[in-house]
Image (cartoon, rainbow, N blue to C red; front, side, top):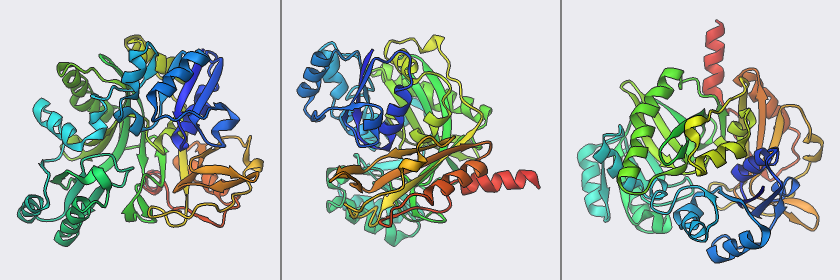
Length: 428
């Protein structure tokens, strides 16, 4: 079958890498893609914001399935427009994608359907938000309602930080994403990323992961789209997985069906594992980035078969198997990120890394210029490795990072530190 993958980041490179191995695949296309994706797919110059152009390409190329990677096309209704033309697409509709596109929509849904999450209030003006914050005190969490590329959440440890965050968002610091905000209680516990494939009625639990949002070692500095991740997340025991499915995932599917808009695609639940059990921090409606990179390294089964099962409503009869090995990815970012990244710096040393056992370098913000690979975004490379333990995967990933010749980049040196400490403690 012919598949079109939408997107051009590290997540999409990992998806392309997995889809390209499917025995079901005839030809894989990607728009817009990146130089790494070009090694396993044919890149096509289609403007993914022009839904009619995407549909026209699908008709011309005989596309059997469109896989939408990033959140923006989902929120913009690409799946709706393709389905209206009889083109099969993996991902939620515009309405269902509000689970990611609007923090307020999701919080209200949790309130109305009894899904455990943090207490909150919604605001469309700064002064009421500030009054609420003063009444609640710090620490407290301020979230932009809309899409902000992973940078729309401020965990304020002081009242001043919280008030500044409100001013930043309402003054346009995050564009339209900050036109409304959600202010919610600060939850304590351990975070985890949980993924489930959904076909509108059934949900299939996938693997777990834990990412590192903050830019600096020791979880310091501003939030980013993610500086690294590992899988599995030890905190997500089989019992915790089932509690999450029962209390959060299945009720969400039932809620969306009750609203007349069944959810089909990936539900990516950011969780806080509290003393009371799992609580929803937020939903994403696509595979995580960089979590997708570690999931794809551990997936035993054919990804394309699973995606088709979700689109065709067949998940009730399906399962997903995972390698026991741990996987860990280190994000190499351009200097300046998460602010304005420095673009154009030359990257070398990648060719000798191809074919290394248990290692994959997924491209994110890369481009070719005069025959050279250059940085073309904030998060640029995802150096990913597997191992018998997180510590082993971590060591292998950082050994690989050291072989990348890129003076214009930087990375965190402690990805996976919680899991490694846990493993060391278990050996004592």
